[in-house]
Amino acid sequence: MNDKPVAVITGASRGIGRSVAIALATEGYDIAAIARSVDSEGMENLCREVEKTEAQFFPVGLDISCTDCHKEVVSNILQRYGRIDILVNNAGVAPLLRNDILDMTEESYERVMNINLKGPVFFAQKIAREMIWLKQQIASYNPIIVFVTSVSSVLSSTNRAEYCISKAGLSMASTVFADRLSHEDILVFEVRPGVIQTDMTAKIKDKYDKLINEGLIPQKRWGYPVDIGKAVASIARGDWNFSTGMVFEISGGLNIHKL
Image (tube, rainbow, N blue to C red; front, side, top):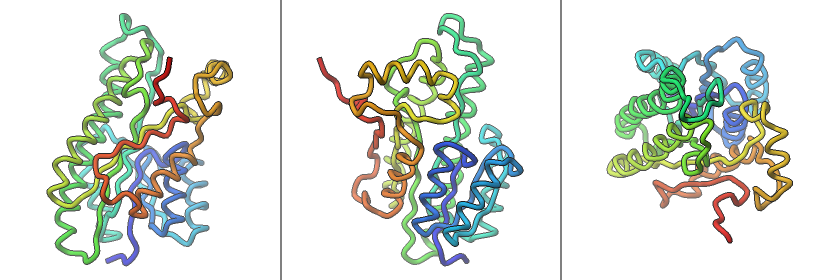
């Protein structure tokens, strides 16, 4: 069995997932990095960054929406390491087309919901069951599950309703898992990013540049993936061990309601 703690991060090849993986490697975790493809340039670059910290890197190919694939993936990680100490459920997509909610298609809705909500919920379920069993096998084992959601879980965007609905559902999933797993001494947290500079927002960068300049974000800047990585690293260090169910909004003050 691995002596070092092990972090499983979905959507790890780029953006927020990449920064989370590097942050957790720096904190002393070996990394099981999940992405649709293990052969991408992003995964190769991530491997180099993780190995600079002397952490082990295990690339895992998985489409998170394929719930039938979850069992094999989790088994492979456990076969390699013998443990999973933190799951960061980060994988997610935006709609392929930004359509008004009155023009939203069932195909787009199902695609977004399967990747952003159904897949993460059942992946967390699978790993939570393993964590309960592992608590009986490993001394000083303190498992954690993190759901990466979005401010879109509480802020409406009428031209990407399926995304907002999926993130709102994932936010409640985090709450329900925190409630249920508190009985098992497993901590669950929600990390809620704001407007973060990633591939997902690249196509609308000009729009958000203008909105930020006009005061949309009180701290007057874009968020960066490293901001989310720092938050998850703090959780993984045990800084919030009496705060299960907590929502960490990393949004530069978008949560401030003002007149």
